[in-house]
Each structure stands twice: as structure tokens, then as C-alpha cells.
Length: 231
Image (cartoon, rainbow, N blue to C red):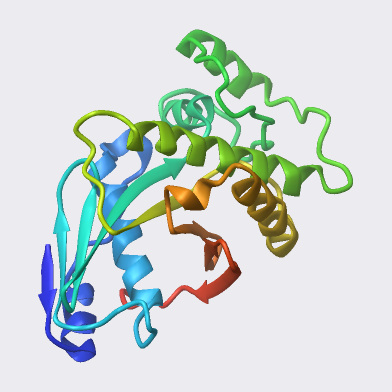
């Protein structure tokens, strides 16, 4: 995918990557979100100790990427965190007579898949639902992110998944929620990751959320600001 021998070369290589992610109704694929996520993670880590040179990123399967940095190999698995029914509704909104403004819907991690007819009815009704109170949005976010971490831990254990000395999980957060306290939500998630020994599988979990990339390790949380090289 790219090779760089210093930070200047990496920055230039990243700028050349097409990070455009089409709308769900316009042909978005897994490759679009993978490319967006890895490019933004690397750009946020420019100048930090995570990266050393020469550096190479290889795009592949199981895991989705391998980062080779000055002789060290790191496997990077990616996932998009989005409710499957909301993703389907997003695509359907462009095809039906939908309200211009719509309310955010509640979703449960691992919820059952709904038929298109049912989702179209929900789009037209546009029910505001019962909203969020207290720290329920922060807790819902941590529950949702943890659900996807657990799913990738299960994938990690399957035959044919190659592991490396270090293994990272890169998550692209598209979970549907109103504005929430990301710092508080991240602390809820960190507790879940520690209690479940998730760091015994993934040494680092990176989540692209809002204008931040939150890095979770057994020692705590580091927030990296997005570094948009593609303006």
C-alpha cells in the first residue's frame, strides 16, 4: 500500500491515498472505510514513537493490514462500528420519500436485522423515541464499542488468522448517538477492556471517533487529534 523511509516520505505517501468514502447508497465498500481509517490513524501518529523507519503498510486479509516499522511487524485488524439497521436505513433514505431532518434512533449492539419494509416505515414515521438521559449515551457507546472488540477477538481466534508480535485493533466509530462526553465514555470502555483481558489479544485499540483517535492500552488512554492531510 505504501513504503516510506522517513516522516516526510510518509506524509507525502499518505496525501496521495484516496480517503474518500462514498455514501452507503452510492457504492461504499469495506475497502473504502479501511483505507480511510488506516490513513487517518497513520497521519495522527506522525512524529510519535509508534512509527519508525523504514515503514511499510501492506493491505491484505486476516488481518487487514500489516505495519512493518524498522524490522517490527504489527498486525492491524479493522472494523467499522455501526448499527446494521441504521446503516441500511441510511442507504434507504436516499431512495424513499424521507424527512429532510430525522431523529437519531436507539440501537442495541448485536440487534436482529430488520427487513427493508420495516425500516422504510420507521424512516417515514421518524419517531423521536425516548431520548437519552444522564450518562446513558456514554454507556451505550462503551457497550457498542466493546461489542465490536469482542467480535474481533472471536475473529482473531479463528483458523487462518495470522498473528504477530504486536496486534492492533483499528475501529471506525459510526455508532448513532447524540453529542456525548467522549472522555467519560472512553473511561467506561477502558474498564470493560481491562476486565475482559482484551489487551491480552490486542496490545492497542484505536478508535476514530469525532475529531479524535482514542488509543486504549492496558496502561490507559491517549487521545490523538485527527491530522487531516487531505483538506
